[in-house]
Length: 222
Image 1: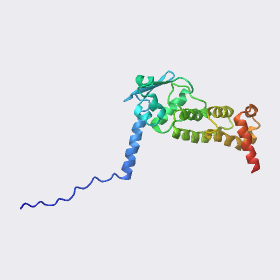
Image 2: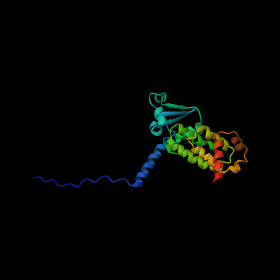
Image 3: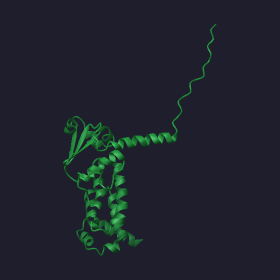
Image 4: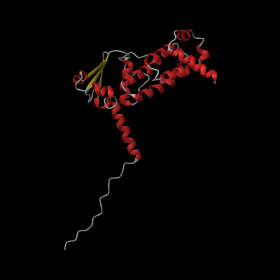
């Protein structure tokens, strides 16, 4: 009778070490980031005014329902593989796509083909686009960046313009940006009352004036 020798089961491939897994993930993210504004493997184009930006549908559509729908074949953008933006801030659109590839966007615009926005309006304009493009994580990033910036720039002459734009591009229900300007304005109420451009803003009335007075009243009650 033939007897077969039992063989030890083959050892399973060892699990990758945590450090190796982290390095691989970092490398993958770096490879994706390197594709930003790179025509290599690009399968669509975003036209920002007169500036073409090569994009990769697998990267942008998986993150935004807006682009997923826009690039469907039944729409013009899907068949032409081009989507155009010719209204609003071109710099803000650029930063949105930079975020989709890198998970962040630079304060200094990473292209010289578009005119940049005033410093205090950069994050607010990206925020407005993030809301339109259904990018919740980007909205949260914009708020964090804006809070850090406005704490240092509240005394600039552009602060009233920033307040106006924040209130014009957000709603009462979408209040994170509004709360950021209110927090700074109330914290520096004594200094701002001596600035004509800020008191002129208050005289115009509107939602900010109401929210500002209510916030100051609550502070006094405490």
